[in-house]
Image 1 (cartoon, rainbow, N blue to C red):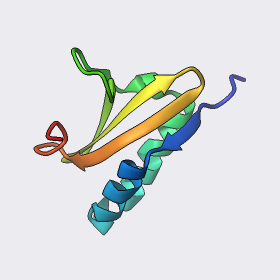
Image 2: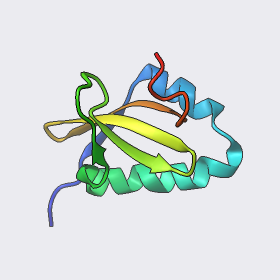
Image 3: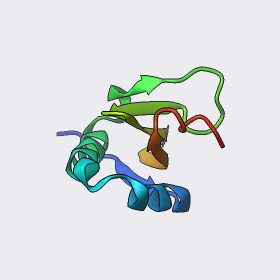
Amino acid sequence: MPEPFCLVPTKTFLIDLRKIPPSLRRRTEAAIEKLKKDPFRGRKLEAVETGQWRIRIGDYQIRYDVIGNDVVLHRIRHRKDIYRE
C-alpha cells in the first residue's frame, strides 16, 4: 500500500479555514483527507506559481501544491475570491 502524503497547511490556509461556514466544515475535512491519499485528484492549474492544484468543495476551492511527499495547502476561499490576492 502506498504511503499517504503529508499535509502541510500554511498560516493563510488556517486563517481561511476558520472563516468558512460551519455547514461546509465536514465536507472540507473529508476533501482534505482524500488529498492525503491522492492529491492528484484535483485539477492542475496553468500559469500560476503558487497553488498549482485546486479542488472544489461546493462554492469553495482549496488551492494547494504537491512537493515531493508533501501537500502544501495554501488557501481555501469562495470561488469568486480564490484568485484575488
